[in-house]
Amino acid sequence: MFEIRKRRSNIVVAFEMCELIFHATARDVQKAHTNAFLAVLKNLLQVLTMLFAFYIMINVLARGAGKIRGDFLLYLLSGIFLYMTHIKSIGAVAGSEGASSPMMQHAPMNTVIAISASALSTLYVQTLSGFLILFVYHVGVNHVTFYDAKGAFGMFLMAWFTGCSIGMVFLAAKPWAPNLVSVISTVYQRANMLASGKMFLANTLPSFMLAMFDWNPLFHSIDQARGFTFINYNPHYSSVIYPLSFGIICLMIGMMGEFFTRQRISQSWTAGK
Image (tube, rainbow, N blue to C red; front, top):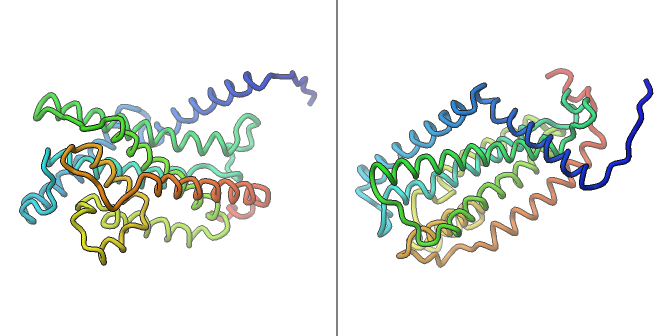
């Protein structure tokens, strides 16, 4: 009934929040499986399945169409890694626990921690999966060489950041129109199977087709990642600034929308679900 509150410095509060985010991230990783290793393995199998499918589609059926001078498997992985990270970030953030979740009834918990945990758990799983696949390929099949490894990893983080930002917009709008937002989110993720540009190079596209893809921040991230991965590819029709600007704008809109929604959401909105 009575509680004695102690004054805490900002540093202590920051460390406590980081600790809560860490535990919430670990809990989020284990949502896919109680064993964190098996959760990563499940994601590895998804990546490998997509890699095999695109390898057959491009290298066999299309006879190497759109190949780049360099390691063909690395060309595929540079697109698939970023695509998987982007769409999984959208799904994780958009599906994170909102203000009406029972977890929010516990005093230390808040939506910032829930959203951060969802985003970081996705980054953890995707990063670990990527390093494991590249390590096995490097040791067992072919020596992996990046023209600019830091830049390529930066584009990987860019795909994750833009996915989290778009997911924030969906999260803020979901309580108001859950069915509509779910459909839009699904359509966007499915459209990126083609619109992400993971199967072709921007430099090889004619101008009328380029206009169909250059709105997509993931398209720019993948094309720039290939520029950092291969010394023989110089992206002319994509930019690093565009996905960064797009992500910041979506993040600001999502944060404002989430704050607005959190002040007005009611338990009755989700009572029938």
